[in-house]
Length: 370
Image (cartoon, rainbow, N blue to C red; front, side):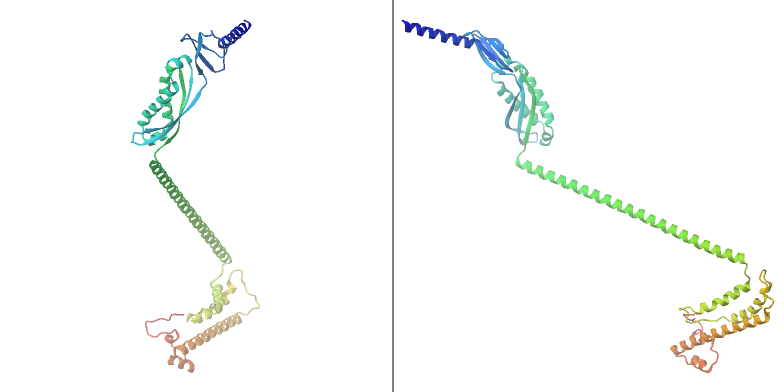
């Protein structure tokens, strides 16, 4: 009898523990539990401590209210230009109504995946490959709009849809790489040509400016030289004009310059003009008339006749020296040319004919050097 009572006590205690356990439900944060009473929806349990009616209330589902991330496997999609591409997508969503997420659809995660695939195929099917590769933002926005409208009645909120990768076929990738390589080479060639063009333009501009500057410097140099020569000539002319020399002084200066003319290294033949004797004869009279010049009165002790004689002797000596030099030159040329008439005339001391003196061979030819 005692044993039966003990077993009964144990059974009652165990039943009490089970009853208490089933009547108390602790729900963690960011989770909602859907409770059914005798198979019918009763209420949702909020986070914290909740009391249930044991053996009457039961938890149907536990819905996570946090935002979830789901990555779908690559899906083959055909573009408008009949190319098969593989697209990976990432979906961000969260449950906003646990009751509808439980009773409106059996498996909302699988439904979202299938809806994403079908919507993605519709969107990509209206685009060609190039536009599909460059329009990811547009595709994401379109997917988010369609999924949000459809999953709203399920109590699901799609917050974001991202396309991870769009993989075209290997042959298309090779063609795209070749195209991009050709495009880069074209751009590089254009840039090199532009650089060469700019370099040539800059070089031409530099040469032009340098030529202009050189020409301007040459012009300035010539102008300065001309101005310097003009000033020098003007200074000499002013000095001569202020000195007011007479023709007699100029004749005397010409007489002094004759030896310098004769001493030139390029002068092989020096011809004394026939008027030199007359000029020298008149030089005496010119020197005699120097006393009549203003401010040039000769000294009373100087004899004008003596001066005239000295001038005549100087003129005669200069003429004789010139004739001697001329005779030596003619003799040298006669020896070189082998002219017998000229050689005989020089040997006999006779005057040389003018044609022989100046090297004429006929009546029309003239000497090359004088």
